[in-house]
Image (tube, rainbow, N blue to C red):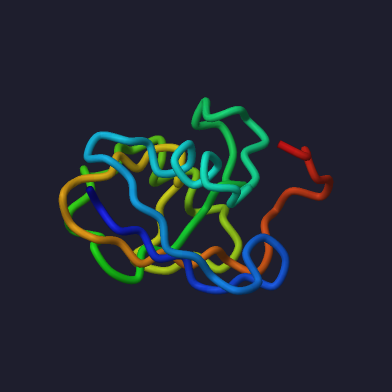
Length: 112
């Protein structure tokens, strides 16, 4: 099992959280299953940036992003070198520390 620590986010996860995911799990889906409702306006089709996260620890354990994800991230609010779309992250064997940015470019909540 991989430990995923989610840093506190004022709205989505005010206290922060620590969850256990299996190697091969999708990060976004795994966090949703544990009640951490990161937005995903495109329903995980890699067409938006609402599920943008910053991987503070364990970034190198994730598969490299493809050009489409990289191009999309250029539009994300608060982009950092360790930014990823959580819908495209497959959990590997290394523990992760994840920060959810304060804002997204989404103007309306999808209530997923």
